[in-house]
Image (tube, rainbow, N blue to C red; front, side, top):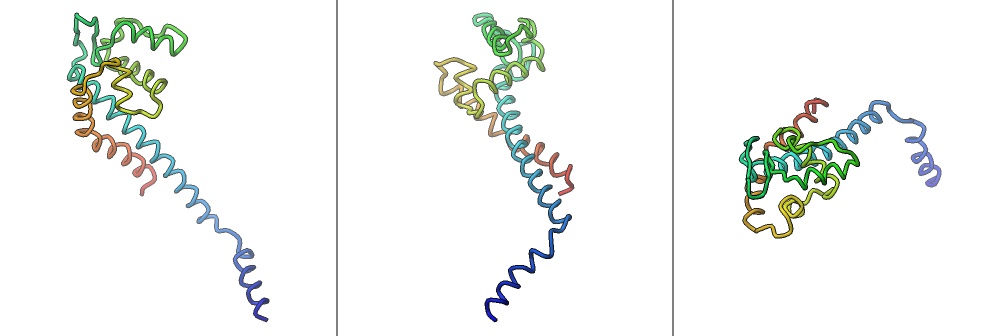
Length: 166
């Protein structure tokens, strides 16, 4: 008798079936989790990009450093234009594109997403400023990163939460 009751208790949940609402809710939660993970990645990328812009030029699109032949918001050198065009296997960017803020950020992101997929800030400093990156450069980047990461995280996460009315 005891075994029969146990078997019946095990069969009852199976006979009920699934609730479409519960199943749909689980799917939505998984989707929200996926999107929140992507939002955190995007927030990190935005904050990192902003940190480099502020460190290199304080956001001035017409900034130019003659001794390095670097210009734009990210002080892009001609060798970086060649590198990004090589990454894309085509000539997409011209030297004057470094003075366009949007294109400069696109160049930065293409380079970072191809050479620094984990988006390590230390590695990004080496890629962007060379092997001899000084600790003071890294400290400046981290100063702006810490200053802005909360803003970018809130912005990205809130857009996801608003989308699902969570």
